[in-house]
Length: 299
Image (cartoon, rainbow, N blue to C red; front, side, top):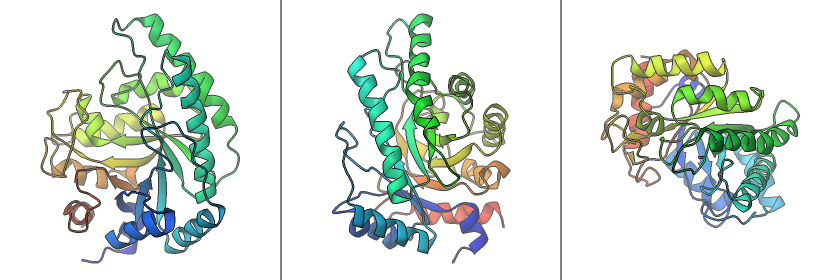
């Protein structure tokens, strides 16, 4: 079934794709082959600190092609980023990487940079260490956010984690102090990872549980701040604090949750991007399944 233009505009679907040879012949070619309406990339080594410079000609062509096709793109920052780290070198590098990724987003026309909200790495879980980590988040991110000017500049998309390892922000309730630390900056958005929020305890596996979760997110963050959904089922049960993605409908969340997400008013205009096992394989069923669930939610 060919999706209507309205459904594509409401919730463009896609997956994370590898850059390969370059953004155009690698990432965009793969995304196009898969029929993505949106997609996500790394613009450097996801497990390293190197600040990879782009190629001006490639960046310009990538931006031209994605804009002309109406494909919405996002960058995911490297996994090592942790603004709450007690290790000065890790903190400094994290700030530099976030700033660099936002610059790359401007250059390639990506509308947001996803950043994991981090942890305060304290076995004792002390309040002092948590407070110090939140001050680091503020000191590191606010100047970067303040440097963003203009309507078409990228969002910094905060992705709450699954609750493992002294997370600074896992469940929806944790968004309140995190956003307060950033003065609810107008370019600080939210990337909701369904596996993460479920692992942190959100009742996505119950009828109405997804709706109530998003309702609460909007109540805390305000309207228009949810900018991206990472659509992932979970290998583990609710509240397990484990970040193990599963294919849509094959985990403990189930398909009903995604129908609820598609139907929620707060997801109007929000892309859904897969990070499930095999989601960038040509014959993978997850993207067609998401299209079916999107259709059912608005049928």
